[in-house]
Image (cartoon, rainbow, N blue to C red):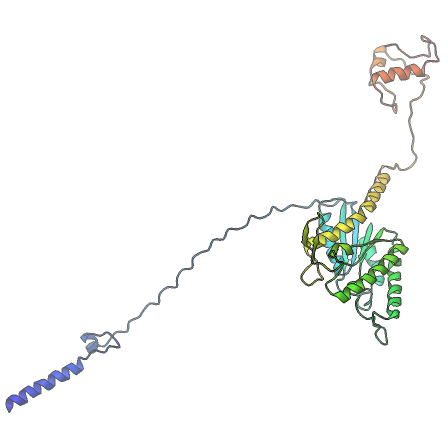
Length: 355
């Protein structure tokens, strides 16, 4: 019985010890951890991976080309109008960038037109603009924003009404008279085709009004319509550029222009401007070379008396009368012979010397 109790007690101790020493699998611990407590392990967070530097090859930069400074007496071309006029300015300014004798100026209101004179009245503003800019040539284009009703004091007048055309024509007449009164050469650039079919039909009618009115007032009408349509006469996003190659001319909205389209606008304008500029340059040359005040012309004349000089001096080509024509040696001999042919050789008043 004692043996049993002894072994039973031993068994209980072993079981108790095994329970005490049962490992905690949530943490890998040893006996020292159980007795003295487990130390907190500070796990250092791994360093973020270093980003690999991506070396991108840079495109070679285009060398900056300084445009030549414009001459003090450069011809001043002023472009007035809406957003189409703005596109024309961009193209023309680029076209003449390297020409020091031509400078392109602008006075643009992109949303302006003839209909909404309450928003911006060109007929009122143009005198001040001309005074400030002092142009030699004026280019104007309007109409892209005029596909809308005229808003008088009472009811709106839609574009299909006859009264709309009468009012529009009257305003256009007033504006073109203003341009005429500047006494400067002036051009009116017509509108191109647009993607909107209804707008296109109205623009065709407006271009006809512009052409007849401008030419009747003494201006030059620049027709650009054919440059922005296809073979069927419809709006075209692409077409021939100024060099004859097919290129994109218009933006996706069917309203604005690409850089090539702007150059094409300048191409049409340049053809009309060329004779005007040439005539202006010729006039400038005449004014520069034209002498001021009374002009005295010194022509060779018969010699009646000279101071005594040596024969050696008389034979030298450099010894000439002031104002005498510059002749070579043989021409001088012939001139002197003709001048004294009526005087006998050897006479005191005959100064001719045989060579």
